[in-house]
Length: 205
Ligand code: TMP
Image (cartoon, rainbow, N blue to C red; front, side, top):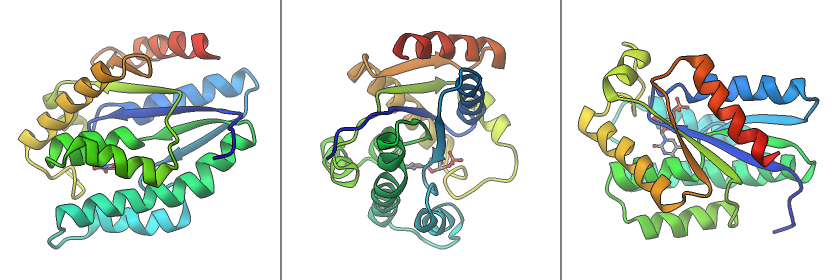
């Protein structure tokens, strides 16, 4: 893989954790500093991925767990190649809503796939690209469910027990990779969370 020039920051958390709001605030903050950013997401950050996202979140019949895992990975392979690596080579700060840790948290801790296997498959999909910095927005399940609201996609419809495993999975991942993954208490006000996030970003800039 060609050496990258930009900075790669990912935003993670259970559904309803407030990560997307924070990503948008970071984008605004960096733009005010005249820094070039690239905002993207998984699944669905590229043309092919938009179709995969539609299947993953809205296909209303049975989806085999392995098929689900490979659909997320297919999205990631195409997205890393056509969007993320391109942005990094151009020197952008790439802000990505979900990446490798979502697969570890949801398909690994949530669905029960072996974490080493997921690690191997993630590496295959990303050519070994790992974020420079990852935020995990941690929130209690009740508040998160309220934020998601009544209209739920296929993943959001999963049982509370599943989301609990995902939440705990994220915290476990943060313990495993403390240099890269920073856990933010997402029960605080939007402004307070943003302030905390900014402090961490300022350090890596
Ligand atoms: P979001 O864009 O609203 O965050 O929704 C994406 C959903 O897909 C969310 O429920 C998390 C889930 N997901 C996985 O299960 N595995 C993955 O690898 C990714 C990227 C997302």
